[in-house]
Length: 289
Image (cartoon, rainbow, N blue to C red; front, side, top):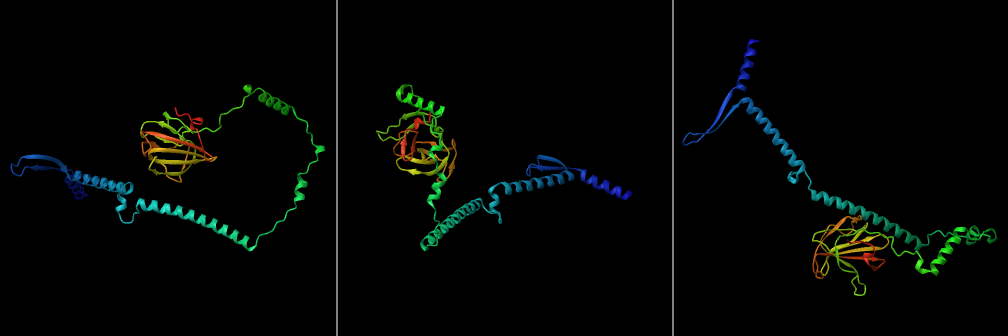
């Protein structure tokens, strides 16, 4: 036991014994730097340094693109391409199924393999046939009031309460000053809204981007198709944030104010609205202030 105790004390003494590390100038033997160390300090410092080095290496591999240079890891570009190919393959399979079903129906029609479901028209008329003698055709009180109101509006048009406002409400694409109004006679089917360069341009309503590209005369152009056959057109943009086929929400940023194209004199938005193929005045639906 005494030997073991003595041995432990010896080990402890060696671990805690202080040593001095001195860095000298080789020519003058002048002392530059000195450190007081022990074997325990060197051992602990070595393990801590090793742990930090392993942790930093793990972080670099897990959270930075450096892992792509390690064999066995796939690159982000390959993953993106694989995802795009998967979506395209799925779309092509759906189109192929629809096409095969369409061709099958056409083949059945051409071969005459179609069931001829004859229908008795007289039986249909019998179901909706009503005896006029059993129907009370006298006007009700609400009908009389409505007729009187319509007659009054037709007679005194100044006091009529017909409304010309459209129920369509659109989001303002940008706030600014209108430099040129909508003028159908001069074939200016848009309003030009002046705003600071690189200001965000927002979609007036939810829809699908059907065109997003560069044109020589109007620069970067983006066109969005909304419900009820409504189209919104944004021209002279400096950059486009959406591409063809993407679905956008109302108020979502789709481009930035610019001065691109030949037919422009400064940073502004050339905004058009088309309803069922006919241009409409955007100021009837949007407040640009």
